[in-house]
Image (cartoon, rainbow, N blue to C red; front, top):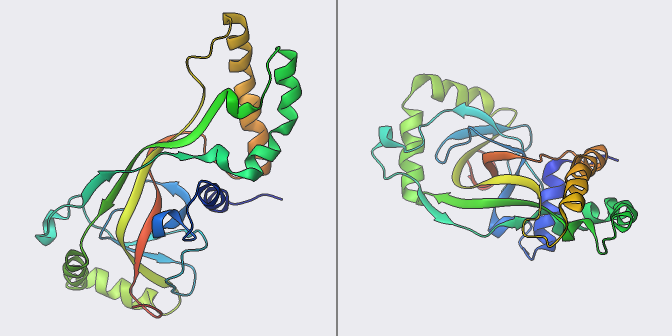
Length: 226
Protein backbone atom coordinates (compact mmCIF):
# COMPACT_ATOMS: atom_id res chain seq x y z
CA UNK A 1 0.00 0.00 0.00
CA UNK A 2 1.42 3.33 -1.03
CA UNK A 3 1.46 6.14 1.50
CA UNK A 4 1.26 9.81 0.51
CA UNK A 5 4.37 11.93 1.04
CA UNK A 6 2.51 14.12 3.50
CA UNK A 7 1.48 11.13 5.61
CA UNK A 8 5.05 9.85 5.67
CA UNK A 9 6.38 13.27 6.58
CA UNK A 10 3.72 13.66 9.25
CA UNK A 11 4.76 10.34 10.77
CA UNK A 12 8.42 11.31 10.69
CA UNK A 13 7.68 14.55 12.47
CA UNK A 14 5.60 12.80 15.10
CA UNK A 15 8.38 10.30 15.78
CA UNK A 16 10.88 13.16 15.93
CA UNK A 17 8.96 14.62 18.86
CA UNK A 18 6.29 16.95 17.43
CA UNK A 19 3.11 16.49 19.42
CA UNK A 20 0.61 18.86 17.85
CA UNK A 21 -0.35 16.74 14.81
CA UNK A 22 1.96 18.74 12.57
CA UNK A 23 5.25 20.53 12.65
CA UNK A 24 5.01 23.09 15.48
CA UNK A 25 1.32 23.57 14.77
CA UNK A 26 1.69 23.71 10.98
CA UNK A 27 0.07 21.56 8.31
CA UNK A 28 2.05 19.40 5.88
CA UNK A 29 1.98 20.14 2.14
CA UNK A 30 1.44 17.13 -0.12
CA UNK A 31 3.71 17.02 -2.00
CA UNK A 32 6.17 19.72 -0.87
CA UNK A 33 6.95 22.20 -3.63
CA UNK A 34 7.62 25.75 -4.70
CA UNK A 35 5.33 28.64 -5.60
CA UNK A 36 3.53 28.79 -2.25
CA UNK A 37 4.03 32.27 -0.80
CA UNK A 38 3.18 33.71 2.59
CA UNK A 39 0.16 35.99 2.26
CA UNK A 40 -1.24 34.33 -0.86
CA UNK A 41 -4.67 32.77 -1.23
CA UNK A 42 -4.98 29.08 -2.10
CA UNK A 43 -7.79 26.61 -2.53
CA UNK A 44 -7.96 22.98 -1.43
CA UNK A 45 -10.38 20.25 -2.48
CA UNK A 46 -11.82 19.73 0.98
CA UNK A 47 -14.17 21.28 3.48
CA UNK A 48 -12.53 24.25 5.21
CA UNK A 49 -10.94 23.26 8.50
CA UNK A 50 -8.53 24.49 11.12
CA UNK A 51 -7.36 20.93 11.85
CA UNK A 52 -3.74 20.11 11.01
CA UNK A 53 -3.71 16.33 11.40
CA UNK A 54 -3.64 15.50 7.68
CA UNK A 55 -1.65 16.81 4.69
CA UNK A 56 -3.15 19.22 2.18
CA UNK A 57 -2.62 20.01 -1.50
CA UNK A 58 -2.88 23.72 -2.27
CA UNK A 59 -3.84 25.34 -5.58
CA UNK A 60 -3.06 28.99 -6.26
CA UNK A 61 -6.07 31.28 -6.20
CA UNK A 62 -4.65 34.81 -5.94
CA UNK A 63 -0.91 35.32 -6.35
CA UNK A 64 1.30 37.61 -4.28
CA UNK A 65 4.98 38.52 -4.49
CA UNK A 66 7.59 37.06 -2.14
CA UNK A 67 8.08 40.35 -0.28
CA UNK A 68 4.45 41.57 -0.33
CA UNK A 69 5.73 45.04 -1.25
CA UNK A 70 2.62 45.70 -3.36
CA UNK A 71 0.53 45.74 -0.18
CA UNK A 72 2.72 48.13 1.79
CA UNK A 73 3.46 45.64 4.58
CA UNK A 74 6.86 44.41 5.83
CA UNK A 75 8.16 41.29 4.07
CA UNK A 76 7.76 37.90 5.78
CA UNK A 77 10.27 37.48 8.57
CA UNK A 78 12.58 34.48 8.24
CA UNK A 79 14.14 32.54 11.10
CA UNK A 80 16.15 29.31 11.22
CA UNK A 81 14.47 26.11 12.33
CA UNK A 82 15.69 22.60 13.14
CA UNK A 83 16.42 19.95 10.52
CA UNK A 84 13.90 17.12 10.15
CA UNK A 85 15.28 13.56 10.08
CA UNK A 86 13.01 11.62 7.72
CA UNK A 87 14.66 8.34 8.70
CA UNK A 88 13.02 8.81 12.11
CA UNK A 89 9.83 7.46 10.55
CA UNK A 90 9.32 3.86 11.69
CA UNK A 91 7.61 2.85 8.44
CA UNK A 92 10.62 3.97 6.42
CA UNK A 93 13.06 2.28 8.77
CA UNK A 94 11.11 -0.99 8.64
CA UNK A 95 11.04 -0.97 4.82
CA UNK A 96 14.86 -0.87 4.78
CA UNK A 97 15.43 -3.82 7.10
CA UNK A 98 16.29 -6.04 4.14
CA UNK A 99 19.43 -4.01 3.48
CA UNK A 100 21.02 -5.28 6.69
CA UNK A 101 22.30 -8.32 4.79
CA UNK A 102 23.71 -6.11 2.03
CA UNK A 103 25.64 -4.16 4.64
CA UNK A 104 26.83 -7.38 6.27
CA UNK A 105 28.20 -8.50 2.89
CA UNK A 106 30.34 -5.36 2.99
CA UNK A 107 31.55 -6.21 6.47
CA UNK A 108 29.38 -3.50 8.03
CA UNK A 109 27.06 -3.70 11.01
CA UNK A 110 24.08 -1.58 11.91
CA UNK A 111 21.30 -0.26 9.66
CA UNK A 112 20.99 1.93 6.58
CA UNK A 113 20.58 4.98 8.81
CA UNK A 114 24.14 4.50 10.08
CA UNK A 115 25.49 5.12 6.60
CA UNK A 116 22.94 7.34 4.83
CA UNK A 117 21.08 10.56 5.61
CA UNK A 118 17.56 11.42 4.51
CA UNK A 119 16.37 14.73 5.91
CA UNK A 120 15.01 18.21 5.39
CA UNK A 121 17.80 20.68 6.07
CA UNK A 122 18.45 24.43 5.81
CA UNK A 123 14.99 24.94 7.25
CA UNK A 124 13.65 28.49 7.45
CA UNK A 125 10.35 29.57 9.00
CA UNK A 126 8.67 32.55 7.28
CA UNK A 127 5.85 34.41 8.99
CA UNK A 128 3.77 37.59 8.85
CA UNK A 129 1.69 39.11 11.67
CA UNK A 130 -2.06 38.59 11.60
CA UNK A 131 -2.48 42.31 11.00
CA UNK A 132 -0.36 42.13 7.85
CA UNK A 133 -2.26 39.05 6.68
CA UNK A 134 -5.52 40.97 6.98
CA UNK A 135 -4.12 43.93 5.02
CA UNK A 136 -2.96 41.58 2.25
CA UNK A 137 -6.32 39.80 2.14
CA UNK A 138 -8.21 43.09 1.93
CA UNK A 139 -5.86 44.22 -0.84
CA UNK A 140 -6.48 41.02 -2.80
CA UNK A 141 -10.24 41.46 -2.45
CA UNK A 142 -9.91 44.89 -4.10
CA UNK A 143 -8.65 43.11 -7.24
CA UNK A 144 -11.71 42.21 -9.31
CA UNK A 145 -10.23 39.04 -10.82
CA UNK A 146 -9.19 37.75 -7.40
CA UNK A 147 -12.50 38.71 -5.82
CA UNK A 148 -14.48 36.96 -8.56
CA UNK A 149 -12.37 33.81 -8.34
CA UNK A 150 -12.69 33.80 -4.58
CA UNK A 151 -16.47 34.01 -4.88
CA UNK A 152 -16.61 31.07 -7.25
CA UNK A 153 -14.19 28.90 -5.30
CA UNK A 154 -15.67 29.24 -1.81
CA UNK A 155 -18.85 27.50 -2.96
CA UNK A 156 -17.26 24.07 -3.26
CA UNK A 157 -13.70 24.25 -1.87
CA UNK A 158 -11.78 25.45 1.13
CA UNK A 159 -9.95 28.75 0.73
CA UNK A 160 -6.87 29.42 2.84
CA UNK A 161 -4.43 32.27 3.25
CA UNK A 162 -0.88 31.24 4.09
CA UNK A 163 0.26 33.04 7.23
CA UNK A 164 3.50 31.10 7.76
CA UNK A 165 5.59 28.57 5.87
CA UNK A 166 8.48 26.20 6.57
CA UNK A 167 10.91 26.00 3.64
CA UNK A 168 13.85 23.62 3.35
CA UNK A 169 16.02 21.35 1.22
CA UNK A 170 15.34 17.61 0.98
CA UNK A 171 18.49 15.53 0.71
CA UNK A 172 19.34 11.85 0.50
CA UNK A 173 23.05 11.15 0.67
CA UNK A 174 25.73 8.87 2.05
CA UNK A 175 27.00 10.09 5.39
CA UNK A 176 30.29 11.92 5.22
CA UNK A 177 33.38 11.23 7.35
CA UNK A 178 32.81 7.49 7.48
CA UNK A 179 36.04 5.76 8.44
CA UNK A 180 35.85 3.18 5.65
CA UNK A 181 38.03 2.12 2.73
CA UNK A 182 37.53 3.67 -0.69
CA UNK A 183 36.23 0.39 -2.10
CA UNK A 184 33.58 0.04 0.63
CA UNK A 185 32.51 3.67 0.19
CA UNK A 186 32.11 3.05 -3.54
CA UNK A 187 29.89 0.05 -2.83
CA UNK A 188 27.81 2.13 -0.42
CA UNK A 189 27.40 4.76 -3.12
CA UNK A 190 26.15 2.04 -5.47
CA UNK A 191 23.69 0.93 -2.79
CA UNK A 192 22.11 4.39 -2.53
CA UNK A 193 19.94 4.16 -5.70
CA UNK A 194 18.73 0.72 -4.60
CA UNK A 195 17.59 2.17 -1.28
CA UNK A 196 15.75 4.97 -3.04
CA UNK A 197 14.10 2.48 -5.40
CA UNK A 198 12.94 0.38 -2.46
CA UNK A 199 11.41 3.41 -0.77
CA UNK A 200 9.77 4.50 -4.03
CA UNK A 201 7.98 1.17 -4.30
CA UNK A 202 6.43 1.69 -0.87
CA UNK A 203 6.03 5.46 -0.49
CA UNK A 204 5.47 8.54 -2.60
CA UNK A 205 8.64 10.37 -1.63
CA UNK A 206 10.96 13.08 -2.89
CA UNK A 207 14.69 12.46 -2.53
CA UNK A 208 15.98 15.90 -3.45
CA UNK A 209 14.79 19.46 -3.89
CA UNK A 210 15.87 22.87 -2.74
CA UNK A 211 13.72 25.62 -1.32
CA UNK A 212 10.61 23.46 -1.01
CA UNK A 213 7.64 24.53 1.08
CA UNK A 214 6.67 21.50 3.14
CA UNK A 215 4.57 22.82 6.01
CA UNK A 216 2.31 25.86 6.43
CA UNK A 217 0.14 27.72 8.91
CA UNK A 218 -3.19 28.43 7.22
CA UNK A 219 -5.89 31.00 7.89
CA UNK A 220 -9.35 29.74 6.90
CA UNK A 221 -11.16 32.28 4.74
CA UNK A 222 -14.52 30.49 4.52
CA UNK A 223 -16.49 28.19 6.76
CA UNK A 224 -14.95 26.82 9.94
CA UNK A 225 -12.51 29.17 11.62
CA UNK A 226 -13.00 32.08 9.22
